Length: 188
Image (cartoon, rainbow, N blue to C red):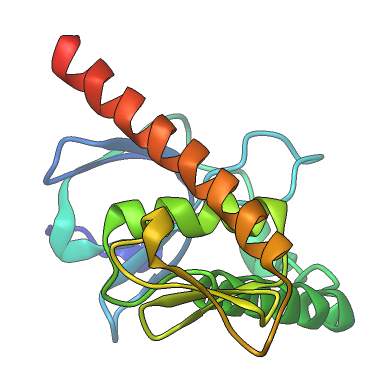
């Protein structure tokens, strides 16, 4: 580019990048130190301000559209940043971290897809279900070991046999669903 980009602040431009993606907006700033052009892309004054930063080395074509602005609005009235509720952002961040941590706890490490599917079924029915290595532990009283068949269920901590019956039913339903989905894939 042979044009000095500092002189086009406030102009409406159409920028085509090397991938032929076209962006229109007003030139908000040009930074010669990192060779970037910032466009204000929001259409209406009522909308929140929206910007696009483009690396100049990625610009294939820059075309000025419209007339020269009567006054350089950007130099006279810079956009003030909007208020950010830090407490809300902090709360949102903590919530996302907690969700990711919970999802990580509910994902078995090095287990088969069937094992994870069966764990998810057990967890939906009994929320006190967790992974311990490759074993599924339900209510700290029933253990299911790979390959997660009904014969791989055993009582731990001297629990009642009714717990095993419940887990057997859930596993049988899970294996039935898995087998039906396998047959569906083979047949369709």
